[in-house]
Structures are given as C-alpha cells and as structure tokens.
Length: 474
Image 1 (tube, rainbow, N blue to C red):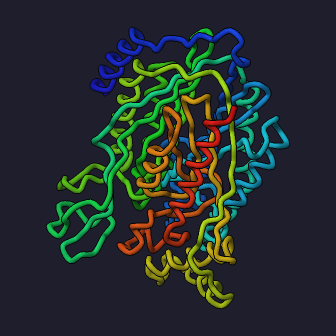
Image 2: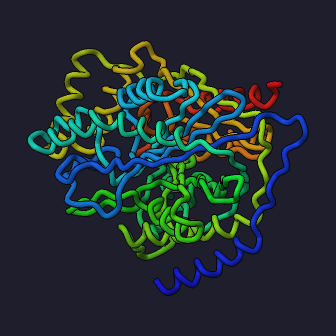
C-alpha cells in the first residue's frame, strides 16, 4: 500500500499543477450544459445466485459493493442519461422495465437513455432459467432481487437528474499496453483456441489486436469541483469472483473508482464503461503464472487509475453544444432458431447444468433458447445508441460482448474528434458478437454467438452511420 500511496501522491501533484484549462463560452453560444450524477447500491444478497456468462454459484459474501451509476446531461431542453451497472449484462425484461420506470420518474425519454453493464463476472445471475436451475432459497432471494433491480437502476437516474448543475467537460485519452491481451490464438495444427494455456508450445500467434486506448471524460462544476470521471477501456471484467466460495465483487473498476476518489475527492463519481472486449482478457500467455482474484483485480485497477491520472493534464475542453442523443433500431441476422421440441430439449440441458451436460452442450442450448425467443424470424432486434457533444466527442452504446475489431472499426470511421465505444449497452443480453472473420475459425466465442456471420459488422456500420448523421446535423 505504501507504493500505491506514493504513486497517488505524485500523480495528484501532477494533476493539480497541470489541470486542463476551462473552455470559454462564445457570445451567442447555446444554453450552458448541466450535468448531474448519482449512484445506487445494487449488491445482491448473500445466498443468491451469482456467476459468469454460464456459471451458476451461490454468493458466499461480498468483497466490494455493486452499483448503478448514472450521469444525466441537459442542454437546450434535451435531457439524456447514461447509466452503467456492475452486472454481466442487462437481461431484456430488466432493460425494458428500467426504461419504463425512468420515463415515469424523470424527464428523460427512453430513446435518450443508454443502460450498459460493465460485464462484471462476479455479480448476480438474472435470467429466470439460471434461477430455476438452482431452486430453493437461492432462487427465492434472486427472484426478489431481479424484481427490484429495474427500480434501483431507475432510481440512480432520478437522483442524477435531481443533481443537475452547470458543468464543463474535458476529454482525451491515455495508452495502456500491458493489461489487455487478445485471448484467441492460432495453433500449429491450424485451429484457433481461446486461452490455450500459458507458454503453450503449440501457439503460433494471437488472432487479433487489442485496443490500448484509455478513454477519459472529465466533468467539473463551474466552480471547478470534480463531478465525474468517465473511463472507457477494452478489457473483460472477469478477474475477480472465481473459486469454490464465490464472492460478489465489482472487480477492477472498484479499485479504479476508489483510487480516483482518493485523488479527486469522494464527491466525484467514477463511471467505467467496458470497451469492445469479447476476445480480450487480462491473461498474459507469456507468463508462467499470474495472480488472480481480488489481488489481480486491484493491480489492474491501480494501473488503470494511474493511466487516467497521467492523462488528465492533457485533456481538452469539449465544445458545450450541441448535445444530442439517439437510439437506432437495427435488425441483424441471427443463427437458426429451433423447433419447439429442440427448444424444450435445450431447456432441459440448461436446467441440468452442472449435473451431466458438457459445457459445449450448455452454451449451444443457451444459444438456441435465446435465438428462438428473440429472433424466431431469423433477425435479432438490436439497436445502437450514441450521446454526442458538438463535433468533439461521441460515446457509443453497442450491444453484446463484442470483439475488439468491431470497436476499432467504429472508432476509425467516426467523424468525431474522439469516439468511445461501450459494449453491453441496450438491446438486452445478446451474448458474444464476433467479427465475421472469426466464424470459420470457431472456438468458444463463435460457438456461443447468437448472431450469424456479418451481424457484428451490420451493427458497427449502423453505429458509424448514426455518428455521421449526428455530426452533420445543424
């Protein structure tokens, strides 16, 4: 802890002496921007059902609380909100109910609300089938939690709206090259495998890139009080939570928030959105061993906080107008749906998870259930979303656990000076979204994917078209 304290002391001095200059409002400029922020605790009860994408365990304790964190923007009569939740994904019924409650309790329309998940692997399971598979008291606790969850998320937005105040925004980025690794590798036999093991002599090379950009948006009051630091980084939030006694944890975003709060003040809210990282995790295959769990999550969060603090002096003012927010429906091709008999068989497999079926059988069963539920006509009803500020900054909400190549595609083709992309936003839980090239390569993410080849690119290109339209609106 002494090293961390010294690091924070040095970085605090750097930020204090080189804070970004305040932007000046031009004569005749648009109405000033107002921003509000809030967070609400959404930690599930001990004894409820938790797990990763396909895991089913019972929470034995809590190492760090989970939150719904909301930021509301207002300008020229438009109110828009982004709320990010320490969840693995937002199951569609939860998303739809949250949108209804926000519309009832606030002045924010559903199409101006973006709800995202950090893709936290040490949080609650919310799909009814997971809960049914466990049964008993754990199911009862989880069902009550799921029923209350949309109200808790909506409450964070209501509180953020009540906090609206004049604000200034700054944006920029840092580079962090030592935390994220593409987890899909080409082997000597010509196949592709996900996380094939440390120092595996059969590995030739990774099959894709990483995105080292640490996106930073800093918001302060007109009196220079820190209000929000928004961090975007493409790395699976899947470090903490493993083990025989699973503990609820917000993973490395928790350490990130704690350390930035120590520097900028506890009144500042840290928002973390996960960049496109369906094929990106923290495992360095060149190492013979690597720490895991909470210790590794703390290490990653500390390094990421340092990158943010080092990048703060270089942040640039964001033009105060115009604020825009849009949700665009996109129909993407889906994998084949199943017959009623096939879906019934898939449900049986899921309900026997951990009691016989192989992991491959489980992920195929989930894929068939989801596609048959949401895309029986062969097209997944997805959406892309964006909040933009003048021509300086756009933040994109993209559905699913999406491959990094798709995020880079959006960034590279966006007309905005800076574009940050958050996965697991809107559309409900859509699972993995590989790029088209990955499908013939196979392996875990492709086997799990609900969308057909090319579906990810259709969504990414729709996001680029949306950004282009926003940029050129008068």
